[in-house]
Length: 351
Image 1 (cartoon, rainbow, N blue to C red):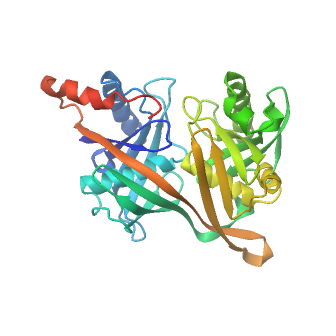
Image 2 (tube, rainbow, N blue to C red):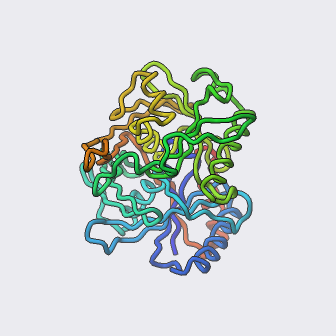
């Protein structure tokens, strides 16, 4: 089997992409194989690679590529999270699959329809620019049929009061591309974007406590990666966001997190919708500011069935760049090439 590494700009780490046709279908056997692969990667200096994309040509007539995300957890080499997805890893999988022959070659304007096996999402990745080692994409998360936005509330309520971080916190639990817990950063002592981006361990601990309370409410294990958690504060015309990833702060915001934030802004009564009004940003176009830069989401809403409010048709994010880093043969390295393989695998933890 060949392993491929690709880095989607803004992600906490590169993604290891594997052809799932050569992997076991049984979950127990699959995780045992991935444990061995992860150990091999770590031995070569790639221990910081915690994202794995399993891809194969889709047999579904509506899709081109089947994709399954596996989050490697830092607690132990055999610890993985299979719930949820990762938009950056979707793009890594699409770029790699095209280069490896699982898909036709990418060209500007080409579209790849991705079936996310983890949660049933449908994603369309449109290539805006393609060169030898990288590609720039616009990504659209499609809802077929359109989903009433209130159905994306994980508890059915726009706000859930949770006891966490030394007090009662108003938290919105929204699942739009991934499960997220959103909290007003001002409740955690960060009054504005500058304070939010400068905050350190104290805020990270508080957010992890909020996430823990949210997992308890949902009945999920605290040791997993989901729901993700993010603090949000309004600023003029934008929402400033700081999110936790695995194993620490996200350098920007997850692609799925940006989509989920946009969804939350469209659901009346959520923490995010309230702050969007304060910031003067609309429900269909949200400017997001993070420590690593700015991004914008565009959502298309339509009247829901039976007058039940708006329904979400799709959400798009543009300007997402992916760079191919290299490929290697699993368990077939010779000593003559080990130095060269280690050189490109040993990437900084944030790139």
